[in-house]
Image 1 (cartoon, rainbow, N blue to C red):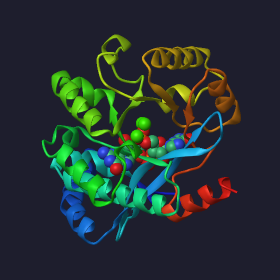
Image 2: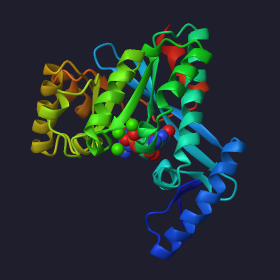
Image 3: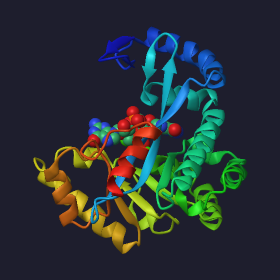
Image 4: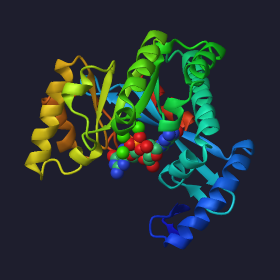
Length: 278
Ligand code: C2E
Ligand code: CA
Ligand code: CA
Ligand code: CA
């Protein structure tokens, strides 16, 4: 493992042998870390581009490793997915996010929503609906305040299952966002058959605005097609004012990215919300 910046480990530079060792080590250590409460959530604001207000946040998980420091989800989610640990971890993410929604309500921020990421194994878990229903009930949360982000790759794996699960989620009243849109293989023609509320344009299309004209054209086209299908559009990874202005001009609804805020702990989110409410 190579150390990057302060306390940040990234494993992508590892050899195959090192990757295998990491796999074995992480699959053994992760369950214990969940018990020891060494996972935590950060929340990244999503801003209404018309009003500049925070209308929702995306919950992003971090692992505070006793020896390695903060481990990125890019380094452990795929391992958790393979070993099945993603199911208990995902349950913890859901319940922690619902508890945060309760805290937001208690502070009168009833209109702020939380989006959580669902992995493929979670989406296929027959207990998913029950688990969500229970978490919402336990913390007395309006289902409309919970959003589930799923990737287009996940949806494509089993379209019939996707349709039936999405329909059930829709009936439950939670909203569904399609994450990382544009880098997979789904077409609009097929998307229109799925009950999806929100489309998140992948950072890949945003990051080279305004230098790459083709990215700008694709982004504009995605926004207008999504609107025609009655979906709200969130742009990910906005880092500059120029990108924000471009997206505003093309009627993108919501922006997320370092320009507005990096992912922050809950108390810091409360501070940001307090500031915009004065
Ligand atoms: P994602 O769902 O696409 O999340 C967005 C990622 O982009 C986050 O990385 C976020 O910190 C980063 N990001 C946000 N704004 C900017 C920006 O302006 N510039 C740049 N360069 N990056 C930005 P993060 O937190 O490292 O998460 C990485 C991925 O790990 C997520 O990608 C998601 O696929 C996965 N992940 C995170 N938390 C969870 C979780 O609770 N469950 C599951 N299943 N996956 C998760
Ligand atoms: Ca996401
Ligand atoms: Ca994404
Ligand atoms: Ca991504």
